[in-house]
Image 1 (cartoon, rainbow, N blue to C red):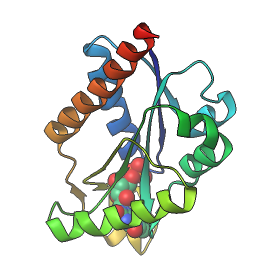
Image 2: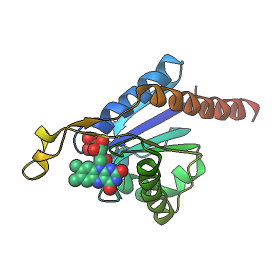
Image 3: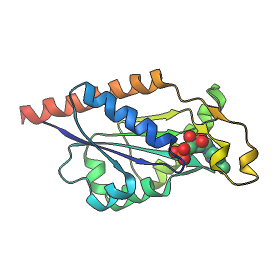
Image 4: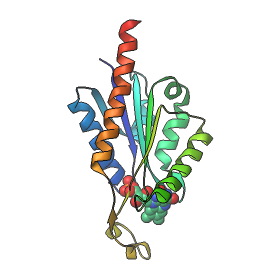
Length: 170
Ligand SMILES: Cc1cc2nc3c(=O)[nH]c(=O)nc-3n(C[C@H](O)[C@H](O)[C@H](O)COP(=O)(O)O)c2cc1C
């Protein structure tokens, strides 16, 4: 069966939870999924996987350092396989906020010279209890849309199935 790596870079846990939901949704659809932190995935490498999903949070316009390191370190292998990428996350789901985050992610991907088959932005979450002052004064927010996450996971599932079909035909 096609093995898929789902790797995440998360500072405060919300991206980890989204990656866990994507992995669970793919497993429920019958796919063979390994869920790893991007740090662990950068060490293990993508050898032995036929597809990959990489998700990381955005902070100050930067994608999580661990996911950037994973892509840099294993660029050629990742560029050869069907790859889906996501990032968190705007504070609202207003089109303008989502487009701003998308622009940030697109420019990171351009710098990393990687062109994933699927790219998306999910709304983010801020828990002020996890921050020191002054960020601890930020309002609590969580605009992660679990239905949208599930719908995107189905697109990733189709990407994996397409790869499986090609492998069977070879
Ligand atoms: C200080 C700070 C800076 C942020 N900068 C960005 C940003 O530049 N772009 C963006 O889309 N989201 C930004 N966010 C939102 C985070 O990406 C969002 O809260 C995400 O869910 C955090 O993921 P994590 O819990 O996995 O660390 C920022 C959040 C904080 C607290």
